[in-house]
Image (cartoon, rainbow, N blue to C red; front, side, top):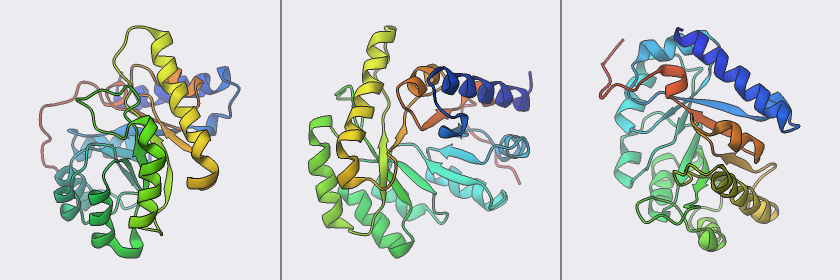
Length: 232
């Protein structure tokens, strides 16, 4: 099965998960996680109709954006630090992993009024090895965001749930994220709350609990190479 066929199958599975949950099939955005894959793979996916791509590393995003069509919508889905922001000369359409005020300040300094939109990463499993705001600290963080950059647009939340074999536990993590978003929607989020949750192993479950964005890499591109080859 080639890349285009794998992409088509993933889309069909997303549509089926939406229908099972009583949702419209266009209510979920597929983000193809292209980190470590070269420009040719992204071109093939784009030719098959995929527009949203997720990257984790500044150097990769900048290098790929330089040789690929400007019609691609880039998403930053990896951990981000201040030094990463300085390297960007391509504004992501959405940064999924905001969890530090100093990073937001750097974005504001770098882009001014051309800021990307953001999601706040929540450490829903309270895991010490993971980044993200603790659930009970989310409101205070959102308050602080408004003080740092009143003109910033926070569109919702992103989570990487704990690795569990128990479907009930995984569903609980996604449900908690949805509830957090709903709780703070009226005050902090514009329009609907975006929920970036669900990856190759659990995106159908995430959709059943309200995910509006799923981040899928290996089921589309295959096994990830250890490094990306520079391509033109």
